[in-house]
Length: 140
Image (cartoon, rainbow, N blue to C red; front, side):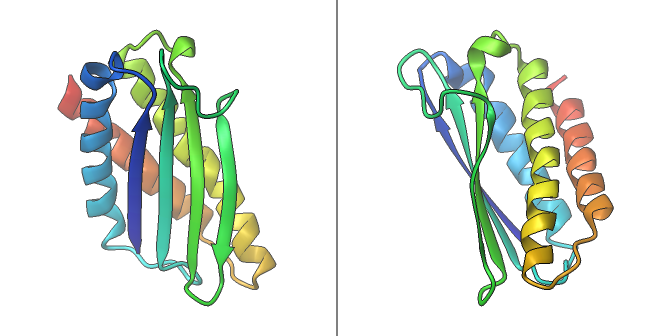
């Protein structure tokens, strides 16, 4: 399965604490998910919004705009993280980011089920957990 991750940062203060974590996590996710196939899902397209001092993309942390395209077997989602909740700690940001990806599995599973597919949610969560562990090792 392909996984696409784009990031939008809402302030210059995020460059040093958030951007490196996003790059490492994305690399780990792409590597792990490239070896896995899920019935009914070829592509997961995530946009991660991190509210900052200049721009607030969404009012609250959460998962927004989940759209499943059955013909392409593709899902897109927006994840939002408020930096005020994590005080720019690299470890706390990584944990928050990983939690949002794990939470997204239930939404993806529901969308696929409505389209007639059964997602191996535990496998997907396990992949996110593995990428989280690898990223924490790299940033420590």
